[in-house]
Each structure stands twice: as structure tokens, then as C-alpha cells.
Amino acid sequence: MKDLLNHYQWNSLRIRLRSFEESLRHALKWLDGYEEDGVLYSRKLILSEKNRKQARQKIRHALDQIAEISRLLDIPKETENSASLVRGEMTISWADLMDSRARKLGRFGDVHPGLSSKLDPQIQNLAEIAENLSAIFGEFQQEKP
Image (tube, rainbow, N blue to C red; front, side, top):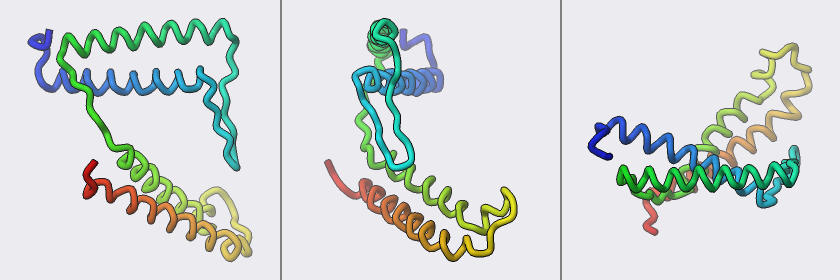
């Protein structure tokens, strides 16, 4: 079946199947009771037992199909260092935080004159932490497993 696809088609299919598998496995975590409880948010799955059972069956079926397609098309399993994901998230967080300083909030309306002195030093500190974490997680390229 691999002969039915050129390299670009095969690669596109591999990427899309992998993304779908990641989403399915993330959904399984939620179905298994995973919850998040942060400072500014909390998340938990609210779903009837009937729907949980149905979802698990569909997910298992989809994962089986992905496994079958990967065998047919000789799509290998790839090991990825999660450090690259965290590094990317920290880089995005740094940019988002820098856009949250008082001056930048002016695009949403008038900014109170006292906001900058109260908010900006803390936002700057958080942005520096995000930048430092990005650098730390960027070191994965030099580290060997």
C-alpha cells in the first residue's frame, strides 16, 4: 500500500494520523479522570457514564485503525523529546506576556495612569521566567538521552 503514495502524500498522512492519535490519547486521559486545577482555571470532564463508555469504544476503534494504517504504510513510531514542546510554549508565553504590559493594553481602551507601575514589573518578571525556561528546555538539543 505504501507504493500508492508518493513521499509527500505519505508524510502528510503520517502527520495527520499522528495529530489525531495525540488528540485521541488526550481525550482518554480526560475520560480516565484527569483534572487540572490551576490558579486561574480548573478543568474536568463532565460526561455521563454512558457517553464515557461510548467515547472509549470509539477511541479504541480509531487507535486500532491508526495502528493498522501505520503497519500497512510502514509508518514508524517516532520518539520526541517533550522539551521542544515546552520550549515552544514558553516562547509563545513570553511574547503573549510582553503584549500584556500596560502600554500594549491600550489597544483595548484607555489605560489607567497607575497601571504600568503596578503591572509591568510583574509581567516583565513573568516574561523573563518564560524566556529562561525556554532556554533551559532548549538545551535538549545538546543533551543525549
